[in-house]
Length: 194
Picture 1: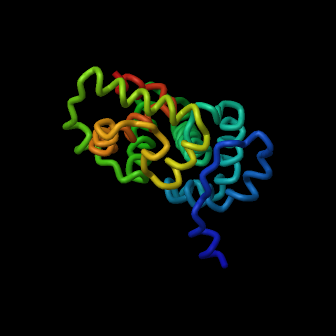
Picture 2: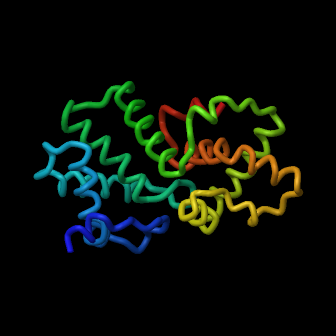
C-alpha cells in the first residue's frame, strides 16, 4: 500500500480555486513528503511544515492563467523553503541556483536537452513564431494541460501551414524550453528569454 502511495504519479493541475491547503495536503502530502526527504533527508520530521508553508505561499502567488503546473510550482517553493531553513536567508545567487535546478528538472520531465537547444540559432521571424505558440499555449488552460500531459507541443491545435508545422516540429525542444521559462515566471532566469 505504501509503495502505491509513494509511486503515485501526480496529476497535472492548474485550477486550484476550489482547493484548500488541507485538500491539497490530503491528496499530495505523501508526494511532497517524499520530494522533501529525497532532497534533504535531515528534514524528515519537518516535511509537513515545509509543505504547508510552500502550499500557503503557492496558493497566494499561483496564477493558473499564466503559469505551469501547480504541483511543479510547489516543488520550486519547497526548494526555496529548504534553502531558507538551512541558511536563514536567500541571496540572489541562491535564488538563481534554485531556479536553475528547478528549470533543469522541468526540462528533464519534458525530455528536452539543454545541449541540443543551445545549438539553435533562430532568426527574428522564427523567434516570433515561437512566441506566438507560447502565447497561444499560455493563454489556454486546455492547451497547457495537453502540453503537460503529453510532454509535446499540440501541433494539431494550431492552424499552421505545412512550413510552420515543419519548423515547430524541428524546433520543438526549443519551443518547449522557452515555454517552460515563461510558465514558471522565474525571477532570475527571465534574462534567458532574450
